[in-house]
Length: 112
Length: 114
Image (cartoon, rainbow over all chains, first blue to last red):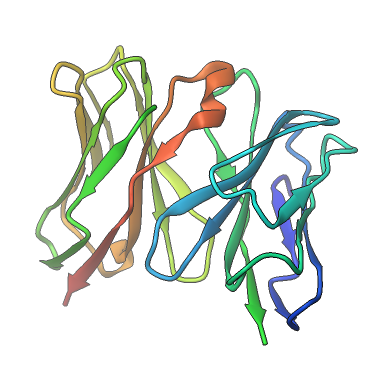
């Protein structure tokens, strides 16, 4: 089935560790995005990428890093420098000729 | 830049009644307005969208209206059912490459009372 796959669904991180959230899409979409959602809150843009090997910071990029080596993959690394990283992380993608953003099922990150 | 305000933040309606959620936007260049439904622990799903060259769009029990002059758009759900309970987000963007700057509202938690 076509879609956006995020993994893992649940991830626990110890203080001082980097963690990487995976996002893969087989929709042949050009643009990919990472959003953060805190409980009961809206969506905040972390990073986005419109083409391979290029990405731009969103509104809350500090403490996060991304790469876009392949069109279908856009992993997000939450670095140990990130304060309060516990949140629900959403990956999304869009065809460059279209307007609609489609979301994955999300990944829960908890710092323990 | 664009700013999207969404109201109300919570909404409770009796099953079978209608629900209306309203959003306003600030950038007159925005021309694409999607609505998403998010169930607990899942990613948002697109339920309906409208472009600025259209004033209203309907899909079964869901409709969206757009007033470009006033810069506001609304989601209307008729004959509400328990499965309509979720968080709803509106959004605005300029489309094309500028769609990367899609701006979301803060969400409305809709509860349907049996």
